[in-house]
Image (cartoon, rainbow, N blue to C red; front, side, top):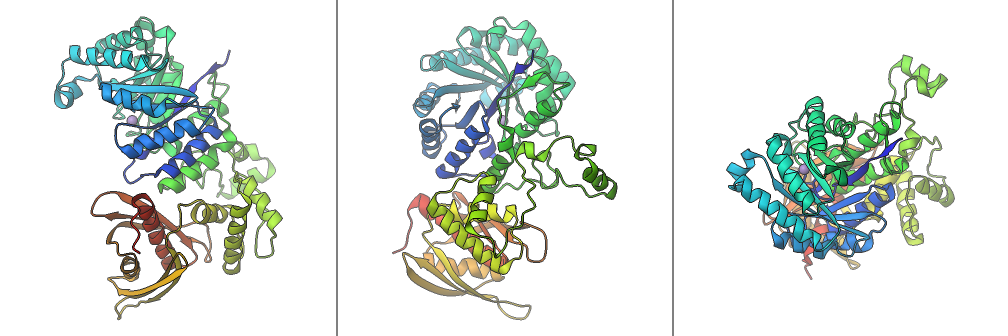
Length: 508
Ligand code: MN
């Protein structure tokens, strides 16, 4: 009989640890809501002791996102566990996830603890967590490089202490599928009490094997897979959950497992995570990449036209990619617009729909055909953002090879127009300086990148940039426009608005 595999999504914890992918609370809640819609089983919402912001976000998700288990991460220190419990306690199902390293390399060089001390700390932590909630997960960090005998001893002890899920992470992405499968198999057959708990794995992608290792673990007894949307995470990232799900689904003949995921929400979730974290999805990424269902070769196209399954093993509709050919343009009405947005998974309020429609009409004046990506860009950038403390009113640039680039900018704040001009090393630099003069903030542009949202000469430019202030926190900004300097200015103002919103630094 087909067996259930539980999905533990750590996009908001391990995924948010991706360099540069910091999310604010509002963005984390949006992603958590979408993960609940996708029907993952557990959302690891963050690491509550790490910072007050992390605590608030985990707590808000536990209170507001229902129908899914919410986990908070904790080291084995009691203050970590107490804090994690405070954050998750109001969840529908509250899980405390505690961890400690079991590999000698970590024990010697990082923790400076003996094996006995680690064993003791693990047991005490699980007991402490168990005093709060029935659902306790224990992770043996760097398990793949741990001594198997010691690892089994620790797992046995934490199970006896009340752990209900034991997670075996390949923290450094060192495992290879066959060996990893045998490793999990040994754990499942040797550890006393293992049949009473769920065995979980958490694989990293340093060798590009995270998904393959996760599948090998499942065929050897693991029943919880940890991973992230789009595979984001530390270094090369985590196992991409959408790939795990679609492998089970597509190769039912080989894998006798199923998940509770609503696969039609996959694409939508991928886009949301990508847009809010600013982590682009590579075009050839499995399942959700822009080219995942694109056919270029004439022979392949010919086959697809005659019968889709000649060259497609998955139906794009199954992952929520709509292939509607209806083109939206200048003459499209509100009804068609609303319908298309609903097809893309957006349920906007009447107010949101009205302002989205205005942006759509403005764009349709500049660009003939409006694609789904354009619409997503409008919603993500113009509608679902943090409050617009500053609004870009106008922008003038003079630039060239023989003159000093100069930007004149008008920003509106509470209906008041403020104008400044500045010179810079280049037009983007000039824009940033002019905005800083108005806001009175001295931000540093940490990086700037551009992507074409859609194909063609009239394509939308999508600028993503990061700013820092006083070398502290980074804020990501995005801006979309048919003009890349306009997009840059919008992105910069977007990042400044986030900074202001979080810190309340408004010049009056
Ligand atoms: Mn990890």
